[in-house]
Amino acid sequence: MPNQVRAFVLALLMVGLMLAAATRAMHAQTLDTVIGQGVAAVARLTSQAEQPARRFDLTLDAAVQRALERNLDIAVQRIHPLVQDMQIVAANAAFLPFASSGLILDQATTPNRFVFDGGGLAGQSIVTDLGVYDVAIGQQMKWGGGRYDVAWDSTRWESTNIFSTFNPSFGANMTLQYTQPLLRGFRTDARRTQLVVSRINRDISDIDLEETIVNTLAGVRLAYWDLVYARAAVGVQRQALALAEQLVADNRFRVEVGTMAPIDVVAAQSEAAARRQLLALAVETQRTSELVLKELIVGGTSDALWNAELNPTDQPRIEATPIDLEGAIRMALDRRTDVSRARRQLDANEATADNLRNSTLPALDLVGSYQLTGQGGPRRVPAGNSFADLFGGAGGVIPGGYGDALQSVANADYPVWRVQLQMTYPLGQSADRAAYERARLELQQNRAQIRRIELRIASEVTNAALRIESIRDRIAAATASRELAERQLEAEESKFEVGLSTNFSSCSRNAISPPRRMPSCARFSTTNGRESSSSGRSALRSAEPASPWSAARRPAALRGAQAPHRRGRC
View 1: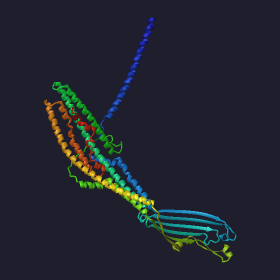
View 2 (view 1 turned 90 degrees about the vertical axis):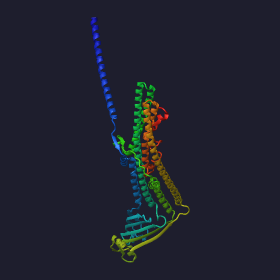
View 3 (view 1 turned 60 degrees about the horizontal axis):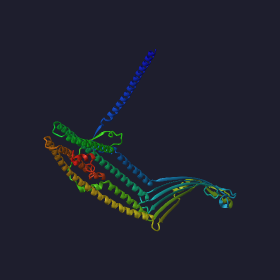
View 4 (view 1 turned 60 degrees about the vertical axis):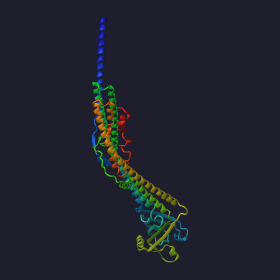
């Protein structure tokens, strides 16, 4: 019996162990499946991320055209002239005709205090009904600062007053009036000055738009050549890395055959590692330059070029054309937006000063008016001349109405004309006089600023011409330097092959081989300098020392390309 119990317990343990093993196998299989699926998903995402972006060949003209069509700074600036157009419309509205009209209905009841109040012998209260309708039109004139007003009003008056001759009484009045300033406000005034300034501001907004376009296109050209230079620099660094890796392989072979010490392999490997670092920096500079160009030529992140790889296809070319310095200065003085803006702002300030000077004159206005009045309605005729006939209300009525009043106006039966001469003059020093003196001093300051801008423009253009001449000399020097560097490298490699040179000398010649890029850099500078002769301050500044190929703005990866040579080791 105990043996049977032990056998049963042993069988249970074996079954439990088998179940546990099967469960662990199932869990392990499930975990492996999950991990495998996750790894596959990550691999798919990685493969998608590593897929090369769409390559887009781009010429300089195409980049400029895309900037004109899609650059957001230009799109924003294009709205400003439209806003100024609305300002002109608002200023011009002061000279549009305006009309007005009104209606009055009135009733009044007054007591009869005296016998002649019109209440009759019975002393009844007097009830009066009045209705008035008027319409008028007026306009401020641009010429001479005058103003005309035409008014027409019609009245109906009815009363229980026994002395009323016309009851109801209909009246019609037409009034013509013209006010002409003779001194203050004749040549100009606040309204006309505002209109002139609004039109000048419209011209300034056009100048601002032109400046934005010129600066943007200059930035596009500069970014384009920056990208061309950066891609060329990446090619140079890749070539330098390939030479360094080839040197490592050659040194390893020489170590294997016993013709070179192992330390030379380490030196070559160090040089190759330095070249990889410089290549990484050059690639980073290329991507940054590409992003700068994209920001100028795309309309947003949804643009097809935003995620594409830009491949600039144009190459800089040298045109050894003579520079007409005097003609360039004249063109800059005529087309530079900064001086054009300053001149138009001077015109606006002169208009304001003219208005302030006009405000210091006495106000002498000539006012002429002409009025026609008409009267109509049923006309009461007393029965006699006795007291009872006059105050008793008896008598006849001559028919009439509103047409009689209109007929009177048409016939000019009751004309009234008037001519006035009104004059006002401030006593003592007025605020207008002080404002005019301040504006006059500001005009002198504006004229001096324009002369300073013109002098600066002449200096900048002259400096740009000198820089272009200097760049041409640098092209010749860089071409000769490249040829000599290549010949030195070939000679040093030949000596190294036959054992007449050291590994250090080969590394040094390899380190100084990148000067072959210098002629291209100089060509880029000349191209930028030539394109900078167009209008706009930023375009002219492109030919100054802050060019993309100067040592100050050369990418760090390219500035460091010759660092191993400067350190004196591989």
